[in-house]
Length: 189
Image (tube, rainbow, N blue to C red; front, side, top):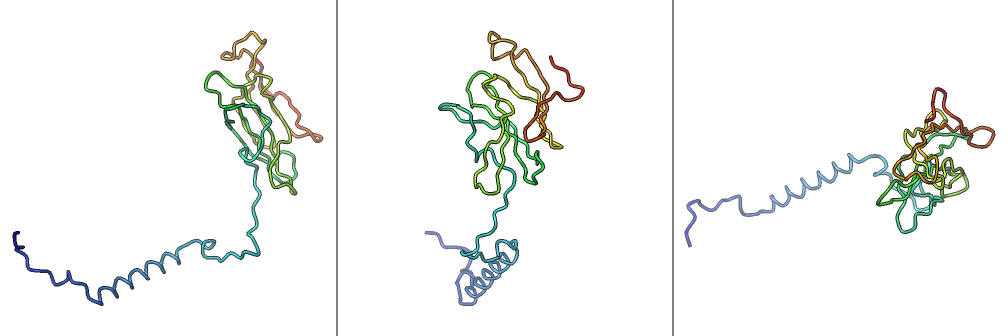
């Protein structure tokens, strides 16, 4: 064994002052981190009074959608939220389809809402039914209006890969129902 050329270092031995300095530094870090936390993290929560749950726009993942996908899952292709019926609560409009590994699965467009007395959101309207073999593009929700371009088929003989009919569509809440119309300046193909 070779001897070290450097003499033993005096600071390599721990003394009580080292432990005291380490404990003081650690206490300072803990105190500083608790002081820098957001107010909600420092506020004690009472088990008797749960925090109010803010109810925003419904999440499509919380809804049992009327879409039969068999063993595959549901894909939310697009979604948008806004108060469409003027009741002060936002609705969510979701474009969904089955998670097919091949082909072009048809889309469904559903309006979701959360009533004041129900915990779970629910589907209140179907704007596009997947049984119609339609796919959706250019989807938007703004100014209490839902707009989309619908791609469909002129007959059952047209293959699913190649929709041959394109229709622009617009839905608005009128007299207790969603009414479909063609947007101004839009042309069908």
